[in-house]
Every structure is written in C-alpha cells, then in structure tokens.
Length: 321
Ligand code: GAR
Image (cartoon, rainbow, N blue to C red; front, side, top):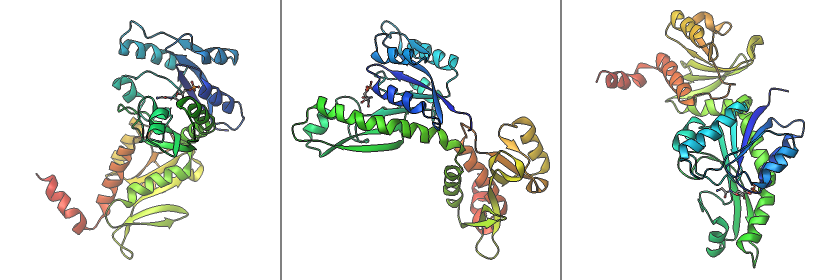
C-alpha cells in the first residue's frame, strides 16, 4: 500500500463528520490517516472523541486574536503534526486569504447545501423557505471566495413535508457521513491515479490546435499536424522501464536544457529512457502539488516546436511585439 495522505481536521462543534472521517480511516484500504483534530473552540465536543481515539488535538479560542494570528496558530499545529491536507468539518470560522492560498488544492470543506445554491449560513432554512424539493450537501475545494471552490461531490436529500431546519439538518448529516470520507479518499488518491492524471493531461493536450491522440509503443501519445504528417509532441508514460513515475514526456530545446532541468529539480524532471537521448524530458505527474499551469506551458511549447508553420506563424508575429 502506498503511503497514506495525512489529514488535519478542523472542527468547531459536534464533530460528527470528523468522527465519520476517523472511522473510515480505520478501514485498512483507506488512503488517508487523521493526524490532527484542531478547533477554535476548546469545548468542541468532537475533541474528546478524537482524544479517546488517540489522535493529537489542538484547541485555541479565537477570541481577542486577529484572524491572521489565530490562523497562524492553527497552521503551526497542522505543520507540527506533519499533515499534508486540511479537511474542514463544521469549522465555522472564515480563514484568511493568505492561509487559503497557501493550502490551495490541499484544503476541502463540506457545506450543507447543493452548491452553488445557498452559500453561507442558514442553508436549510433558506431551502425550506424557497419551497425546494431537495436539500443536500457538497464537498468542495476551499478558495478565498466563500463556498465557491470546485465542487468535488454532492448528495441530494429530499425535503420532507413538515421539515424544520433542524430535522432537515439531522438527515443531511447522515448523507454527509457517507459522502465526506469517500470524497476525501478519492481526492487524496487522485495525484497517484493514472486514469485521473491521463484525463487531465488529455484535456490540456487536445485543447491545442489540430491535435489528435494516437497510441505509440503502448503509451498514449499526442500529435499535431493531421493524420498523415502529424508529429508527436507529448507522451503519457505510466511507470515505464522500471521508473516509479507517471510522467509527461515533452520536447526540450536541447540536451543542455534537459540536463540542467534534471539537475536543478530532480523532484520534478527526469531523463526518460530512449526519448531522453533525443532531448525529451520527463515531468513527474504522480506527486502532490503538480502545477498544471506549468504542465500546460510545457505542452504548448513542445506542440509549438513541431506544429506546422501555418499554425505557429501568427504566434511568432505576436511574439515580436
Ligand atoms: C455539517 O452539517 C457541515 O456541513 C456544516 O456544519 C455541520 C457540522 O456538523 N458546515 C457548515 O455549515 C460550513 N459552512 P458536525 O460538527 O456534526 O460535523
């Protein structure tokens, strides 16, 4: 089994979602472990459960502190616990933009509505008042704008006749307890899932002009320039030739450039078997924190180095200005 992701859970209240995450992590195949439960409220009921489970806890009231100072205290606890992902589970404090940006792509939240409906508070009351047939819950990535990050998973929960915000909230929580552990497990496993990485790469490669996908020596390859005279500008290599890497292979400008990249950033770049000899570089994709904008730039550069003149001419003209 590959190394597990290490998650820190932030709570403010009962912590029933935290409990669901903890018990899911006790099942052998779970791809994450809970290394910290932290709260802005030392009286949060969930802390006692975490302690009884032998999980490290941290609690620091936010009263009288600036937002930045409180966030910094929480972050120090997260880093000391060695967590790589933060999971908000009923954490009822807004985090500062700086904090959110530092954890971009590594922080998830669960929100009790079918986002983008009913961001913020009193979600159930508003859904009932609107006469909606369904309430629900959403797991999403945290971005500086409140409850607006990419939605990763949702479950609908019907609103029953006579439902009050409390009765509905209680039922939605049953759905949350099923959804959250699965969504977190899926998300933290993504960066090493070849199907996910290939899908992401494919979307970027095929967005470039006149490209197609064709298998080459058993690997997906991406070409530009049409059926007959097309040239490869990228390959997806899934643990080839004894490397542990799932990688994108693209063309560099020269052997010197390739060797410099590998020497300066061996955690990102490597010289692939066979292709390396002709100046192709391997970019490791199965690592946390891949910068997909950078991947897109590499694809574009490699595409441009072999694309027919009629496709690149306009770009070179643009570059001169
Ligand atoms: C959950 O229903 C969660 O979706 C909600 O608070 C509850 C926490 O319950 N979160 C928010 O409203 C965030 N804006 P829990 O403490 O029992 O897990």
